[in-house]
Length: 150
Image (tube, rainbow, N blue to C red):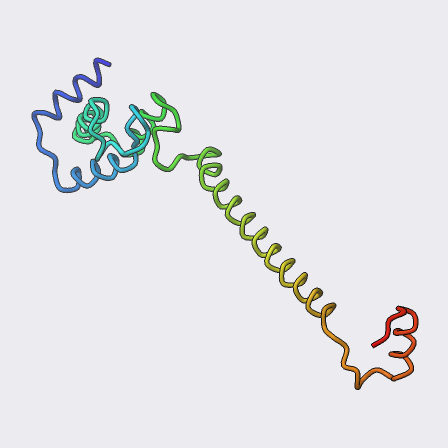
């Protein structure tokens, strides 16, 4: 904690270079605000996000690399602090929605195919037989078996 306070004091005395400003912006876009985990620290307006912005600026001005800063916050808050988590958590965050989308697409395709096939079978079953293509003997036999007079 003392190291962090010293870093912040150094940061207040120095102005960031253009490269450092870009690094600060990239880091602010990679870290989630720990108060709600719904926005990055760049845009979130909580006290925690403000404190993290100051810490990130101080660490960048003190010469820490982006990876070192990310590791610091990952150790402090866990994978949830990262916009795009590393490791298995990252695969789950992106793999599950993709799997769900592919499954939904497969079910939709199956449903469409099943509906089209069912309608085709129904349409062919409801077609009327043209009397000209059926022999008169068959028609007479059907009428006799049904017991109806036409």
